[in-house]
Length: 81
Image (cartoon, rainbow, N blue to C red; front, side, top):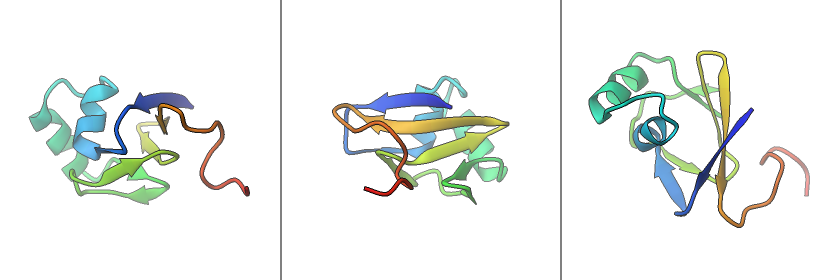
């Protein structure tokens, strides 16, 4: 699993695909998301404005990305405290 670090409370799904260098433009990210190939926390996501927060997991083409906000803890959000 790859970790993508953010410095804000959230990042929109469309912005994430550009930050992770999966897409080069917003238009390309929009088409990818609308194609139904993006998953957030194991659920198909077609909203490009979906807010991703610390601990969310984005999946696309057999790649998994863990969203981490700087200063966040290690592990995933499904783990028990």
